[in-house]
View 1 (tube, one colour):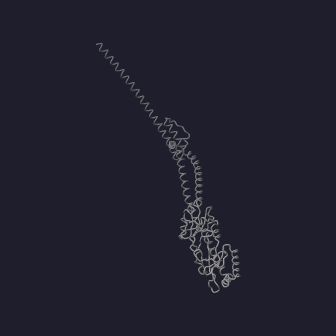
View 2 (cartoon, one colour):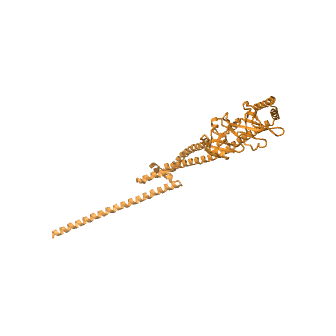
View 3 (cartoon, one colour):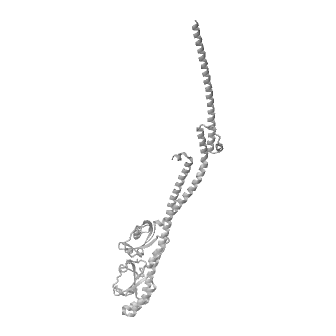
Length: 413
């Protein structure tokens, strides 16, 4: 601290260092928060695009399944063969339907099984032979639709009691030529394509995740997970709760895996599903942290370079002041006969330091002149004192002589 106060150069460089440090850190903080906001807007926009694309793909998949199942149910071969089977229960009609179903299973990879039930709910023909003769009601686990309610029907997803995975069954009526229902076609669908859609890379980052949520009673369950244990667990997060309550948006929250994420969520009203796209908060804003670190490093590097330059320039600025200070010390020590070429050179400058040098030079001249005057006065005073002393001695000698003379006269008398 003492060295700080005793050195103009150190103070000059030190103040600039503090100013540079504050400027660099302040700039880094401002740019960091600005980059966070820009990244948030960019990620938000990307998430909206990703979630819209996946929603569109899911819509197309459901629409395609509806069309395929309606087409199967309206195929004359199937309708006529089943009508004949109901009338005669002949083996030929059964075999025709069975062969047709096998062809469908071969060509349609989204269909896992097909069956036809009577109007009373008894399974009469099925690709799963053990189901024939069983009662299959159109309950909560079956999504029943017709050509007329196709736009308003909402699919039902459920947990399969056999595989313990999410499953979906579509059912539609078989109508004869008179438009009368003669049976119900039920189709168990594979959700593999849904899994593929949700697992497709989004381009958001390495930790991005997309998934669908369905309601089962009062619980929320994952639709597209490959983890059977997780599929049967109740999942919850602020994003999931918001989506399942019919809200759309983007927010920061802790997901169902207890990871801090930024997530986009949307409620698919016509599918009874919630869709979410998430990426960890750490990865989402890692770029802004890198930018801030690089900025700090670059800023400190520039500050060091500038510090060296400032040091050199400060020495150039403070050197004349130091020269004047050294001459002041000589004056304090009593040396007024200063003949410094550097000081004369400094006094030729037109700036404030030149004025200071010229003023110092004039001050030395004034002090020297006054010192000479004082010396002359002292000399004269000493001379006066000497003359006065001599006069006093003469006067004393005169009085002594008079005293002796008076004594001589008295003695003589």
